[in-house]
Length: 389
Ligand SMILES: [Ca+2]
Ligand SMILES: [Ca+2]
Ligand SMILES: [Ca+2]
Image (cartoon, rainbow, N blue to C red; front, side, top):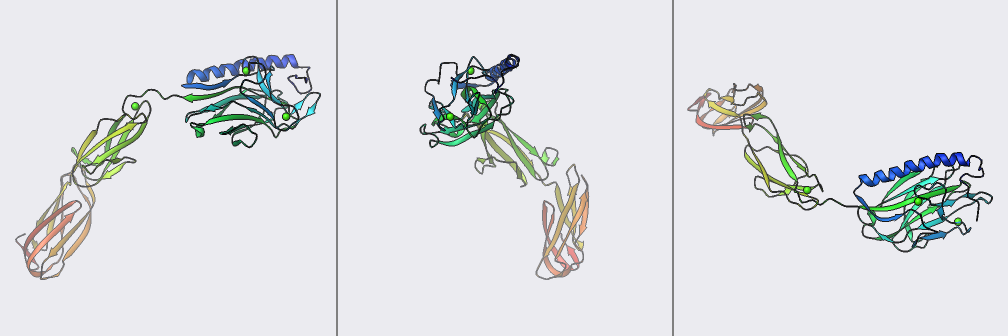
């Protein structure tokens, strides 16, 4: 058996270093315990290398063929317990090695929530830079051919134990072998691994449906909206989380809600909605109702040309109100249409607009618009004078 000191070549400071390292081991072990307490994870696989030799069901493959492979009862400063596994790229009194050493787990079936964690450290902080890879096989244990997916790639930097985490969710429902491969390293020293765990996460039992609320944003006058209304549906679920939200605007049928939407039509509106959580709980249908009104009204009067009086019943000024006057008749010769924009109609106030000069004769129909408001009136045009409007 080869000599296995904790430092490459030198043994002078062995006792001092051992004391320092033992402190680190205590802190690393504490970290593991804290992780377990906080997580809702449970082990589906665990190996701490506390037995004799290669653990049952594991494979130790010396792929480079130099007869040196992973040692699974390495007793120099393990992460926990008395032992860990270690592989060398330099052995005292032997010299540099060029390892391609594989340590392969037994098969295990993973899930969509499976995570691999393992601890890694170098033995000698002065010679730390050994290279470690983690590979997954969903078939057999032939190296390298069966191991098609590399899931971790790591070069050590010191002798402090570190926790590495690998997401295994890609292998949901598959039986996998996990391989720890010490390779592409030479003339460093020993790299160690310990406390290999694969954990699954359980979702809490969720029997409570989500809650969804409706938020309306728009300019209001009293209880009514006087313009576009932006509808936002806000769903929360304290357990498994919201899967999706459905809504039905004014009885047009339920569709999935993805983003806030705008309702513009004047009138009464009703939105029904509900959400479904990731455990399949369905919320009772909720609803919110609102009305969009047109606060503007138009009065048409005759005389010389057409006059429209636009009244704003809103409690806010109406800004940039486009207006139009159309005179429709068989014998209208001039001035059939007039348009413009009113900068502001004050809250509760009126603004008067005139059509300008119109020339014609006979019966006419007047159509006027101002913003959301429309009005029509009929009368008689005598040259440039309107009667009966
Ligand atoms: Ca151990
Ligand atoms: Ca080897
Ligand atoms: Ca829930």
